[in-house]
Image (cartoon, rainbow over all chains, first blue to last red; front, side, top):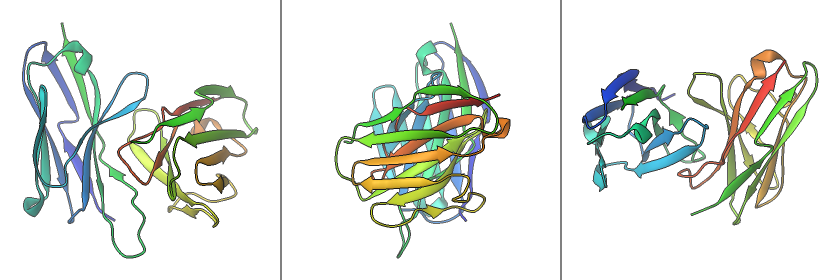
Length: 112
Length: 110
């Protein structure tokens, strides 16, 4: 099956700093999403971005599908950004359901 | 967007017992997915539940251990059977619009 690798595994920032999270995947995908898992375990969808660039406030994401990677940018980080960030990909092919394969995540800690 | 709820939100269970987790969606969906997240780990797909047919299980997961029901297009249950401490995880459901997940069920097995 498809492999999804995220880096770095852990990241510690001071409040106000910027960061870039990376997601590499081993095959072409129809679906790529970034999630934030808060300390209570809730998964919040940040971006649906199988290709191109999107921005939402302090967050932005870019996926270069031809090179099989995606980047999540966090600017002016806040303590509430802490948590685990997951990249998840999906492949929709004949007879295949729309499930997601998750990367191992990046644990982000933002210090006050 | 779909609103997904799960019950219970958390539970502590004894070894050898079973727990049934419910997932309710506020709209009709064809496919529902069940994921497991073991402590400190990523999410792994357990099975896909389609209404009117048996669930499709991923490698490493079997129906006897994780029976799934899908009685209608808005509801599914996952049962964790004959539990052991290794089953301690967060269990999450999602729909075919995979951008949205339920809040999860945090299970601890003693």
